[in-house]
Image (tube, rainbow, N blue to C red; front, top):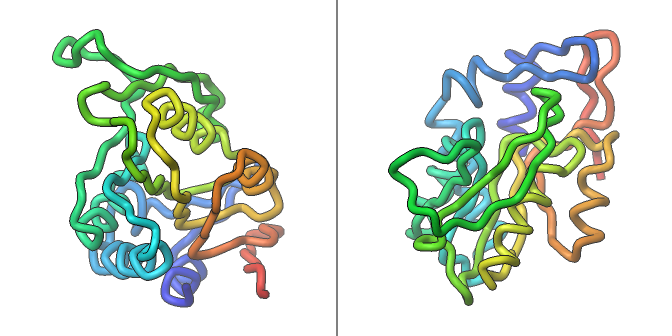
Length: 191
């Protein structure tokens, strides 16, 4: 998606350790017009999959997932990293290792909102090692729901995330795939 790539070049910042900071427009402060265009693009890509639920993980993917859910006219469910008093004990639970935060989270969703037979599209802001996606896929399997695909805003194509998710038999579609980030410069993968 050219619009997203242009924004990454304009406002993204590369830090040591293959960290791309896009918090000025994607996952802290959000450019809702850009997110809306991304949601439209995910709708175009996955329009024939019978999606009836969007799933993401808190917190950075929620904005993109919300816009995507609007175009699919379906609910958005986000997996929580902490269990609160207002969530019933009836939850699906898995563990997710975070690349960015260098920690492992217990991730949960209420059994009330993820059901057998659901056709789930997973949306997230980044794909690096694939841990978040694999955790969300696990939650869907526990529920008996079908993951029809994963829509990713920005994929770090030089890391193993895509191959790990595809090995699990899940389709991955990314709006921007980064081939390398060296000397503060982002290079996108071209087909």
